[in-house]
Amino acid sequence: MVSPETTDMRYDLQIIGSWIEKDSKVLDLGCGNGDLLAWLTVNKNVRGTGIEMDQDKVAHCIAKGLTVLQGDFNDEVEDFPDRAFDYVILSQTLQQVFEPARLLYSLSRIGRRVVVSFPNFSHISIRLQLLLNGQAPKNEQLPYSWYDTPNIRVITLKDFRKFAQDVGYEIVDEVAINTHQYDYYGKIVRRFKNLRATYGIFSIEMPDR
Amino acid sequence: MHTDDVTSERAPLIVEKQFFTFAEGEDKMMLESGALLGPVTIAYETYGTLSPKKDNAILVAHAFSGDSHVAGYYSTDTEHDKPGWWDSVVGPGKGIDTDKYFVICSNILGSCMGSTGPASINPETGKPYGLTFPMVTIGDMVTAQKLLIDHLGIKELLCVIGGSVGGMQVLEWCIRFPEMVRSAVPLATTMRHSAMAIAFNEVARQAILADPNWQRGDYYSTTPPHMGLAVARMVGHITYLSDEAMRRKFGRRLQDKSDFSYEIDVDFEVENYLRYQGSKFVQRFDANSLLYITKAADYYDLTSKSPRNSAEMDFSLSKARFLVISYSSDWLYPTYQSKELVQALKRAGRDVSFCEIEADAGHDAFLIPDKRLQDILTGFLDGISRNH
Image (tube, rainbow over all chains, first blue to last red; front, top):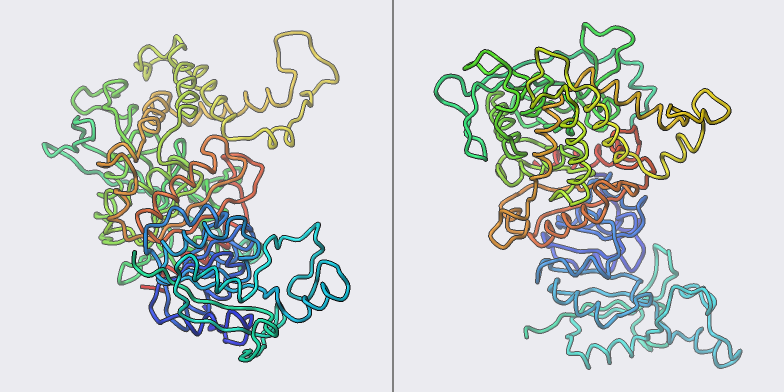
């Protein structure tokens, strides 16, 4: 496998990659062309598995030597044993999930830690559009019209924190970033996160029950 | 990636069918049914070079009517002879690259392409076994292959790969000899034969049994049951195709005529095709072998033997990396059956990849040249040989 450089990945994946411990077992949901898995395999010596719906992307990943299952991750995650992975990663997809609470519960069952990234719906550009135009907001992170969007959930950093608290997840790590959807570069937002961040990345775990 | 024109410039792969005989004398082979069989001969072919560490061997398991001739040509072949049955996948620079790997393919026990089967001479009577040949299982076929691998001095297989009934052998290898299998690629296969698959096999068997020439399997010195065997093959062929493939290949086109004959005769191209397939098959295959091998496939149920009636327990001993492949239009072993297998492997904590390849050719799709399969296999096998 060609050693993939860190900066060849989307910025949020670079941050997620930095959170993963060496030699761990990782499940990447919606792994696409396997950029993150390939990076983790080479740089962190992880044993990675990906789940991806698209046949061509799955074939591409397997041809790269990655372990990838073709299927809908909402169903596929159910078959893994408890604590089968050290990390389960769900990047930029939570806003498209039909039953997020149920999915996150399953992920916390099969993984010790769950890493989630999503576009922040309380970003200033979104707030201003709704306030000034009175229309469903669009921006680079959420570019679709209300009638054809795959993004069926609107999530803010604050909402996610509250959800985690209500359900009983412990937030182990949290980073707010400002970047464009497919950008390799971005910056970490430290002040007024809920207003200024385009994406939030959380690492959560369910304390032993 | 290698392209087809690169490989076609190379000299054709010339192979030789070889034979390995065991269970001679008193020490007979104990079959799963409890019956004893011996001596047992297994026909096999090898491709490429075994590395000094003997760590580059790949076993290809063939489907029910296949043989050991997986690729290349025999030196005695004429220009009309076709290469082996998976020549698109196995060869220099191909998906299973014989420049890198030592490839072994053996004819299954119970077949008629060089290995011991119902058409072989029973040394005790000096006559062909016929129906006195003991029933063999997929497990017995794999046990015989294992003895061949031992004979070749190979301790561990880099990969066991096969489609259809060959896929069942792949799974059986992982259960019976888990320490010997580093990776496994079951294609277009199932953990257990479904009622529908058994039903089609039963129709095929009944076609042979209904042929008066069958004579309870004792036809080796008379006319064989060619009609029954041809009909059996015709039924089989329908299950290997798909609605889309048949529509594309034949539609309702008429065979060499512009109107119906209004007689009980060949009118449609599809009829002509099936008759041709049937008549071609009887030239090379033994009717009794078909009876035995279809039975072995029907008996196959990986989930029945484990304590909890699930395959998950069985796979827990395997260390292999798995690559499961299904084809979207395969209705003999549909994708949901591959997904059941994937589910069992996941539950057992195995490293498993799964890909459903979009193809309209039905069950036969795994035998048809396809670049996607080539690339997937190349990458998967690279990964296995790298992580040694």
